[in-house]
Length: 153
Image (cartoon, rainbow, N blue to C red; front, side, top):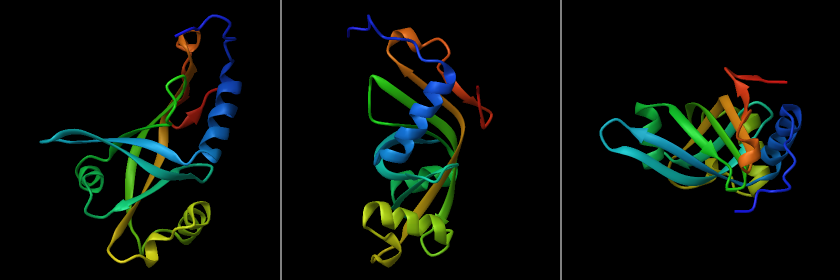
């Protein structure tokens, strides 16, 4: 991969770029782990509400089962060059108990409301504790842009 010519962004610019992507993008890769069965990764639609990532999955999915046992998750936006990784703990909300604003915003973004579907769904909310962002090797140093839930400036 060619990385020459990449201008290293400052932390504030990386934060702005990451936030823009969190608002604009549709898909996120969700990594969970089960103490007995190991890691699991799946792409899900997501909504960024300005503070947290909201996702929805079947209440019986491997992802749902894993986060009930081990809530620590890692999320990755799907770009191997313009990397944004988030880490936090997933909170589970049954589809009929999700806070209304989040459910409506999710339905508005995707044109799909899991609350009216047959079967049960689970909303997952992840408030990031750590965010890393980089573009190519020149930005590996200083890639942490949020630590302990606080954006770095």
